[in-house]
Image 1 (cartoon, rainbow, N blue to C red):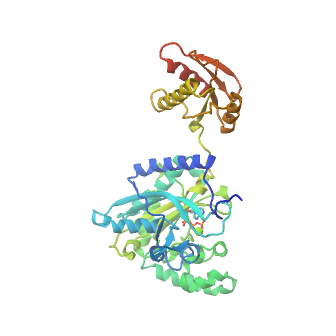
Image 2 (tube, rainbow, N blue to C red):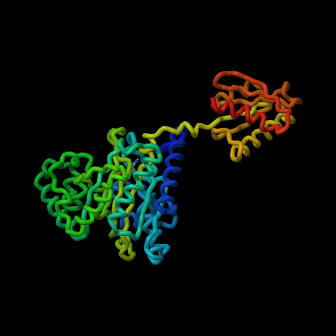
Length: 435
Ligand code: ATP
Ligand code: MG
């Protein structure tokens, strides 16, 4: 019996893996320009970390974590999100003691035991950013611009996306809002789903984020109505910066946007798209000024976001310019012709890195000289070769090779006995590559 990947997981392959790479490249470009450094945290951490950072009453901690116990009876969980681990690392390495500002990014898999559907997996991938040490509203705007540029440089257009922005207030104004929202929910208790009924006391804000009841609560009080003076001024400034026409950026104030995690304060944002049906959120983030302290550190303001790579990738096509030229070297006999093919393949790969680029990135592999040319051609075809370079008995002793264009079937002989040997056949390949 053949085995399959566990429910909710999959292999990232073919087209998707190409797009993942391009997305990662766009993100790397942006992160450098925004002053971020990479951090790779463990895939699993102590369960306690997520309980404390993400919040005991969140969906993630209550029902979505992959928990396990190791042989030393330590309680561990696969990471369901990236911020908790980054904050843990920030404190573990005392980065709070080196001036304060530190900007960290990560890319990698996250794990949540959710019901799998289109665009919702149990192992999914995130690109995340966490910026520590800057409490200012400019930082909020600049962080949103970073997320926007990663998406733009990856190939999406801002006009096809919706950037929702809201403010949740701080320790001071949030409790007031919580009371107003709880009383609103209490009044419509009978119409609420079971989860939301339980949320009234435990965590009323989460009801706005509910997939069932959330969309119906268009008349619920919004956090902006309860913001204290300082939070209101902060939010106004964030919007003022984002509205600078020179940025060419458009966002929408979404007064009932809340986030599923407990740690957010003040600015929150979410990025959605029309193209994905129900799973339309491709990224989200916000400010979390209280989290570092809550995790045992000093008062350190912070803001971050995570993009869902799986969902972003499903909106992208691999770029034409990155189309690989697949070159297959077929040969007969294992000794001298095999030696030629081996040398040619290696020369081609080296030239591809250097001055003699073919205009397209090259992938070169060797056939099996023990098999017939015909069988090698079949394998070349199955591999998806664009070009087969043939060194058969005929070509053998002479300084000759045959190139077969697999798209048109056209074959032509290349005589490379002139000087600058390799340049001659590589030029011929270059011509094929450009068609
Ligand atoms: P959703 O509302 O779709 O459940 P979320 O609020 O749980 O998303 P976050 O924790 O904010 O998501 O994570 C940020 C991004 O990660 C999301 O916007 C989404 O693109 C992606 N994401 C979250 N959960 C999954 C999942 N199970 N499968 C694929 N992508 C996911
Ligand atoms: Mg979720």
